[in-house]
Image (cartoon, rainbow, N blue to C red; front, side, top):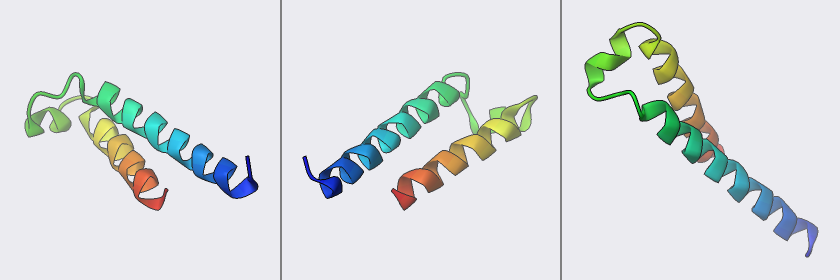
Length: 57
């Protein structure tokens, strides 16, 4: 496998990891109001950052 293929594979693995984290963090979210309660804003921030990471990938 070439270096370029390894880089692409690594990037895709990072994207899959980010998607899995987003899904797990959304499990307790039932409505947009859930982001305003307790640690909801932290979840929103972390989900947003994972979406940014996917976009950069």
